[in-house]
Length: 393
Image (cartoon, rainbow, N blue to C red; front, side):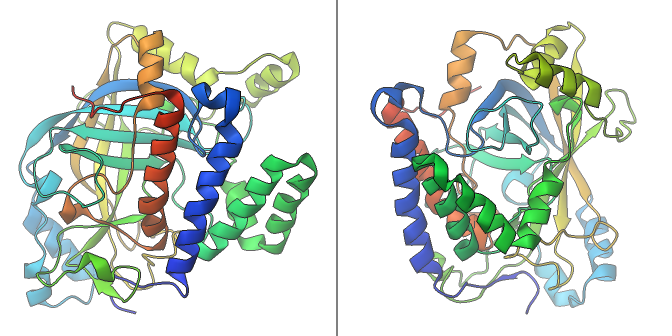
């Protein structure tokens, strides 16, 4: 195994094709017929809010980052000099307007007292440069992050078998046992899933988020996109993204993570009423005139081949490879509770494959997401009667 290299799975193309067909069937099962006007995503279905913010890219010290990398990797001086960090989104200090969508990870809309992952999808506006061929927009960069450091499935084949059980459970109530059976037969994945469901953030505006999957910084001169998923492909450097909450006042110290009180969750569950805790928290927090929320925008390098690119269940240890801060995300006072805002958030389309070519999403799960996300978005927009337009500031 080589550093900065992604490897194809056995029968990858076959299982990607199967997932494509399965996702189409699942969207039709979920949102066909009379339900089509309410069509949502097949995962991360519950939108808590769509809000505006600003992403500032710093004039960070590239030489200092490379010096730290030289201590933590076996890269030669020639290999290190070939890495160019200041390209693409990081090319120069700049402030970008962004749209953020906060959501829960489940396949359907559930109460917020139920265990789940929470996500923050970031759409950076006005990003110039050569695009990925699968981009659905012309001047944006999508960065999708979650409040877990890992994804619970190792391979495309395993995800297909899991999603097949979920799809069949949606067809017939009795088939829900298939999901339980899958989890029993996959104890490693089951443990990871349960672990990711344990966090109940006090607020999504002060939560930490990770990309879990990896992205390139730059492409080699002989890069051929048609070879990804077929042969091993090496990149100049591979990173993961992170957003770490920090205080609103300089020097912007990292915030400790807080949880929603267990008593509050129990009260919400026993009351039997609909629980939209996270949406209500965002609305109330941002309604305050002095509201300010900050995250350090960070990157983490793969520093050893054991920090797998393709297996996203493996967490990249921060002691071995620390996050470097390259920018800051800011959200301030705004009103987000309006029907138009709600529809806008539902209709926004995000994909790891929407962005610049030099920030190519890499690894098995990303290769699958590049195929599946556009299918879900097209189906959702068609069913809702939406003519999608690229969002602006």
